[in-house]
Length: 454
Image (cartoon, rainbow, N blue to C red; front, side, top):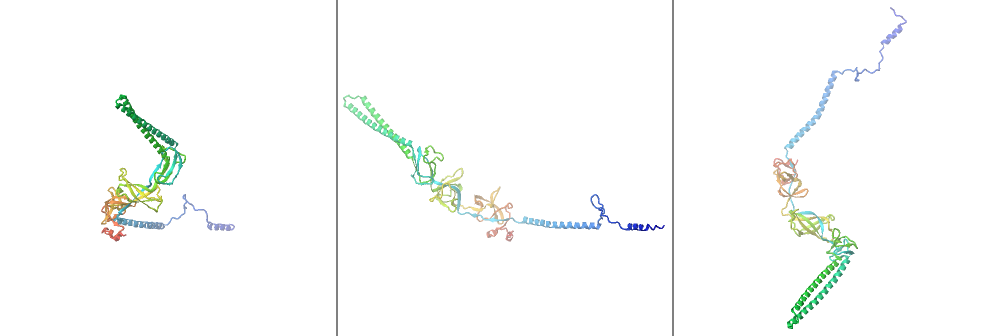
């Protein structure tokens, strides 16, 4: 059947349209519920194997890089541990130093006046005059103050009158005694004449009258002595109105002003009129321990230093010692005097006293770090033929960085300056400072000097 000619062009156009490629769509590729495209192609198995091999190689390289230094460090540590286990302990040595024959002993002390006293009043009255004040230098007997005592003045006048009365009584008693003696003599003469004009009773009465006159005279003399004693007492009280210096010194305190009422019953603290101190020389008291007490003698030179004069040292001497040990503290008390012509030393100053003591048995001095304190007592580690020997010692005075050893060491000994816990009796050691020729002979034969100097 022949197609219609009219429809031919249209048919050709449809065929052409059908033969032409469809235009590309811009719609997104389909994905699954996890968002992974569904049309991805699977990698080739060879690619997967190659990636696994590469990953294994990277892991092996990283493991090698990290393991090798660690293994090298562990090997070095084992080598060091083995070397330390087989090596000898290294010690630093020291030698005991003998102390000087004269040892300086220092004690804290207080400066005191040679004499010091408080001056009180002995009379009731008012302070009328003051002639000195704080800091005044006075001599013995100088007038310091005067007191007005009206009561004492009145009592003095009364005692003077009483003495005159007693003296008048003595004069009357003497006259009565003279009359009684003469009367008795007349009666005795008449009795001896034999005229019987005088009886024996009359003679006895006159004898009794004479004895009574003697007794009255003795009483009158006693009253005179009592009145005189009363007068002297009030005269002395009158003299107490003048206050004088008991010794040469300086006035260190004055507690009253003119017009103050004074009483001898006021003897409490700060109730004295003056304090007076003798400051040339000054004295110092120290308590010396028993171990040094017998080594300090009288006239031993002593030295004093105070903070006020850092560049000056005062020289004095030991003047007194108690010659007895205090049972409670085991110390002996000493008194030391220091000249103080210029007044530089003031009572109450804190100072340090130094006395040089000659030691009959000098002690050894070692570093404090060389001592070992354990259950076996106080010891030091000696180095003998390159081996350790723990030597018991007796310690003396602790000087801080150094310690005195009174027994157990000699100057030729070599000790460990700072022994550690690793040292043991009889153990071999290496000396860290063998530069001393005398020490080299003590090094162990198994440890050469070159190795010890490493």
